[in-house]
Amino acid sequence: MIKNDNESFEVSNMKLSGMYEINNISRSVFNSNIIANPSNMRIQASLFDKDTESLTLNYLLNFSEIKKFYFNENISQFLQNSAAIANISNREYREFNENVIYLPKVKRLKIKLEDALLKRKSSRKFKNQYLNLVDLSTLLYYSAGDVRYDYVEFGNSKFRQSRKTYPSGGGMYPIDIYFYANNVEKLDKGFYLYQSSNNSIVKINISSIKIENLLNISFFEGSSNFNVAIFFVYRYEVNYLKYSEMSLSFTFIELGAIHQNFSLVSTDLNLGYCVWGGFDKPELEKCLKLDGISEHVVSASILGNV
Image (cartoon, rainbow, N blue to C red; front, side):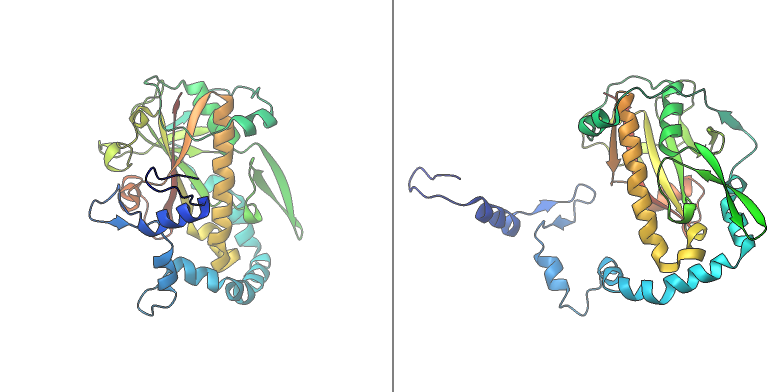
């Protein structure tokens, strides 16, 4: 509640919130020419505007139809294709054998799950200190590494399938982990690919670039001291064959679980972690040598000492 000195009156919190939504506008931090209105009036108006198309809204409105017509049929066809199952279950074919850097042995996590859940938070301000390689190894392994292997029976055949610490639709794991080492012990600055089958990394050979041109970090004080920027790459062909149009939905569910893993493990290691929405998707894909058609950067995060 607030009071005016000249005229006593009270305004409810709900009314204040409504006034803010209607009147408040702000300039986009990514493009000064864009004026952003936090009100949902624009979204509501677009529902009745034939010239305005929302890809997100179209996907949601057609979600049940997509599932009805494609989901069961695709799964049925996939399960009849033993070659496809064998190919998907063998993730090692997507990994490199040359110029591999094997990460050191991981540490045991000490924090209780309850404490990690209660203490975790997004951190954007970091100390200017290097990240040691053991902590990076521990973070990657527990967050996204292959922690065990199971065998899946298909007819008279058995296929070895990796298991991670997060769920994935069909156990397909279509997301690959890339990162930019900004201040990491024993690692040159640059982009790396994480190989989960043996907890190793491979440096991506690219020309020298300024990470600040790809990641919008300048407007948060202390964020430029990050140690690692992580980029999550969705490989479209991995789960689309089985799940068709539902594959994107399953991938984003998986992505959320991965972020939670990174956040909780970072908490144990006394590191700060923050999911980061401000990144240049097309330029990042060029730097990572992705085709931008079957391979997409779908999310990013930064990590550092706090």
